[in-house]
Length: 157
Image (cartoon, rainbow, N blue to C red):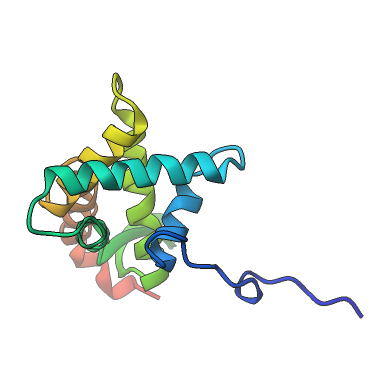
């Protein structure tokens, strides 16, 4: 009988430079078209830029704090009750928090135009570290929607 493949059965290796699984996951999300070496180069160049621009703090700490700042605590989910759809605020799973943080940072970095990706990514990570920027705006909008729909919290499943 063949072994069934699951995501948890495949171990994620830490990245070679920082020895961090978080960095490895981020690089995998950054990667396009299976070009991991290109994604790593972009990420490491962005970290070098962060190291030059942010004094007194290591680039890896800036990256980790940026991810933690962008992680959402609440989100709204649609729930259909008796013919009406309600936006019900719910807590976000830890794994989904990380996924959304990665997605929002990369989306906002890719949305900026006119500079190389390493510079756009570095500026977005620095902005997220300082609790500003478009990824933080997205998080704040999600939290605002959850707060506005707090009346429907009793519909949470």
